[in-house]
Image (cartoon, rainbow, N blue to C red; front, side):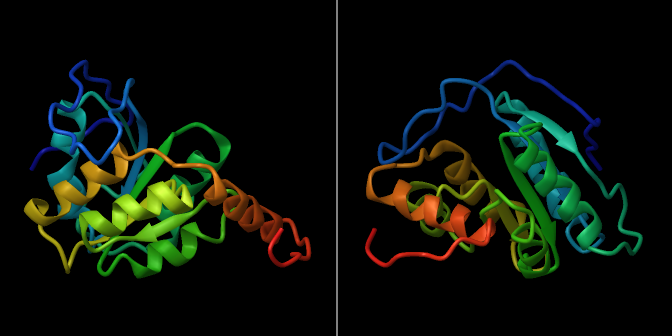
Length: 180
């Protein structure tokens, strides 16, 4: 099984990016993690991420031995929220548990995307910064285009920026004013 170190940097950039997505100009620092149920998928997608030039920061786990999914999820989410990583990719059995945990961290907007279109729209409209996947639902062949799309799509801003700002306001306990 392919293993990644705690911090791996590779030089190449992704060659295939859909014309509907913006090209990444620099590598992305990715906090990548999983529980035991997501370990094999994490290990399967990591090589293509490293080969695409992304820096991978593995927050665990490192085997299929049972661990609690909140642990790697919160480690990855905090790295993204604190700026130590640009994006997060977290895998558990369904992707749901790690999404719930990641979304408890202020500044994180995690999406459990099931296909490339969901990944793209989560980036374009919601500025999602953490992608969660289901290791018992997807194989690497299905997951790779979801991850590639998530990492290769830029936030549109505009009216969507106002909405993301409202999400941040909710995190800080502010009351929202409709249509502002």
